[in-house]
Structures are given as C-alpha cells and as structure tokens.
Amino acid sequence: MNQAIASVLFCVILCFCYASCVNFWSCGSTLGRFTDVSVIGCSTKDKRCIFIPGATIVVFIKFIPDVDIPQVYARARAVKEEGDVHFVFDESDVCKDPYSLVQCPLQKDQEYNYTEMFILDPNTLDYSITLEWELVNAAGEKIVCVGIPADLRNATRSD
Image (cartoon, rainbow, N blue to C red):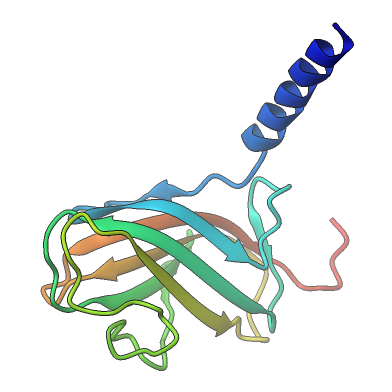
C-alpha cells in the first residue's frame, strides 16, 4: 500500500514538474517535425529560458524530415515587440558546419540530431523574446521551426 502511494505521489510530482517546464512549440514547421528540443543554459524549472548576455547557449533539436532534402540552412531570430533581431551564424549551411552533427542529404522519415552553439552578445539589453530557431531548405521552406520563450537578462538582476 505504501509503495502504491509513493508511486502515485511520484507521478503527480513528475507531472507537476513537466507542466511547469519550458514549453517549446512549432512555429511553422512545414517539411518535417521536431521530436525533441533541449537548450543548455535554459533551466528546465522555469517557464521561460533565462539567457544572460555573454553566456554560451547550446541548442539541440532532434527532427524528422517528411521529404528528402539535399541542403539545410539554419536561421534564428529574436521576436520582440520592437521588431525582430536576426542572429548571424559563422556557418549557416548546416551541411557544411562540422559542429551541427547533421549529414546531408537528409532522408525522408529518418531522425537527425542538430546542434548549434553561440555566445549571446554581452551588450544585449534586457528583453522578453520568443527565439525562433529554423532549419530551412535551399528554397527557404521551413523543415522545422522551434519557438523558445526566453528572457534576456543582465546577470546582476535579482528578479
């Protein structure tokens, strides 16, 4: 009996933790779907990622294309009320980026693991944003688009 109660309590706590975690969503994926997203530098305890300017952020996306895709490019932007800010990558061609872990061409219905690491500009001001991370084909069509709720916050802030 005690073991059954402990199991139920564990499930309730697990569900509560899952419900309060950061929620990633599709922001217009058309040629595929993501199966998992994780962001190093983003606490799973928060409803929004908290990014400190100057910090290194690592994004992992597992995804499955719905069609064969010969070429893949990465795009990311911060969506905020004042307008979008586009991130610049050293190598936006995912197929040529040795750190992306993606080998092209992509095959339909096969799962791929994409990774990207970047340093948030230390001069970034405090903002609440939606980070939209896209993997697109050569025509600019979205293979996957992941919405990531985030707050850019100065390290000295205490709220």
